[in-house]
Length: 173
Image (cartoon, rainbow, N blue to C red; front, side, top):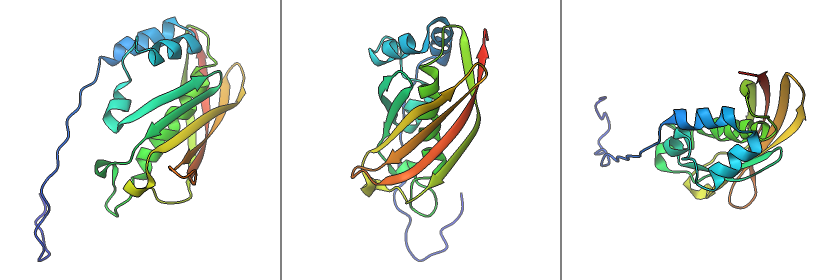
């Protein structure tokens, strides 16, 4: 551990713990059900949240055909070295909303993966930002690819970032 080179004493170390369910349960269900049925059961608590949700403290709060909304309340453990929420946390929030929006449009036995993700940050997110909301929406969907867009807003509705993604659709995977 690096030594403190300033005259100030370091703050007390903070710790957190969390638990998650076997991710294979969700992966199997995602292949057996169409997207809307999968998310209805996830929303009803018939499936546990994905491990990434537990890891980051984010939650899927709304989902319907071609749309997914996630929330995340910034915590200290989301911070980068300059005292703001790390861009990778925001990118994961956006990627989740984008991918789940696409997933809602898929038939049973069809998988997807992100081909690309572009995110633009428009302002810093901090503890003072309050709960962040990310809404992902499908823009286009074809046999092989889908595109989606998302916007991350703070508690006042100000845009923190916006993203677009392309997903590869893999039928019969």
